[in-house]
Amino acid sequence: MTSAQLFNFVTVAYFGAMVLFVVFLPTRSKQIALGATFLAYVGFAIHTVAIGLRWYESYQLPGGVGRAPLSNLYESVVFFAWTILLVYLLIDLKYKQRAVGAFVIPFAFLGMTWGQLRLDQSIDPLVPALQSNWLTYHVITCFLGYAAFAVACGVSIMYLIKEGKDGGESRSDSPAGGVLSLFPSTRILDDINYKAIMIGFPMLTLGIVTGAAWANYAWGTYWSWDPKETWSLIVWFIYAAFLHARFTRGWVGRKAAWLSIVGFGATIFCYLGVNLVLSGLHSYGGS
Image (tube, rainbow, N blue to C red):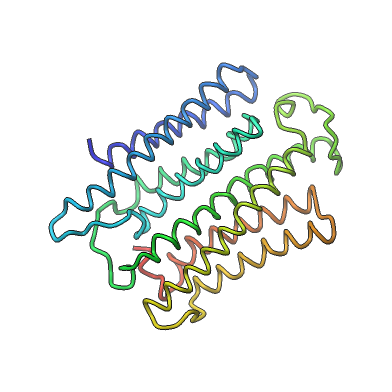
């Protein structure tokens, strides 16, 4: 059994979980919700083993390529999907709002599908700029931040759907009819959005700091206004503005949800758009 085969199983498990979470919304079946959650946990467990196995496989290649599987676009997409499940499952343990899975698991499934079908899965030696422990610290912290922002985006979409159906900025716990009756209250959705960003923002901050240390190690300068660095700073300012507006101006509800969605859009561009469209010191990340 290879890591590539395990990642295929992971993709199937996430697809099954996604479908069951979506089916749960109109059926309101607790058994279906339990099955979806079970598949999510199974997929996450296999995902963890697969990442470890790919790490082990890198040591079996000629020339001692051995490294953490975090250095190319395929590996980063796979790790991004893993961190999304990690953050989602941690939040699910606290809130136990199964409907959230229908809006978060698709991010992980789409990432895994793209990685399995379209990206180069080979394990190659690291380029000189990546031969540093700072790579591991930087990637882990950044993607934990990205994953938390993905969860925040998912619940923000739920908030806007439910708030629009309720016909106002109400944060009450009054139930909505139909499928929306399974959505958490707008108060809970707003709280999850805030808590997820409170996880993601310090992780992104650590990612930028470790990235600066890595840049100094690799290129002799902490900051060079490379497109990736510039966009990471833009993302940081968006979420800093979110927290500042919440603390000082009481931004909650619709405004907070829209800012969260905009922030995740900027995050995806920082992660993929910069690598695939713009050139710079991080261009190798698109290979």
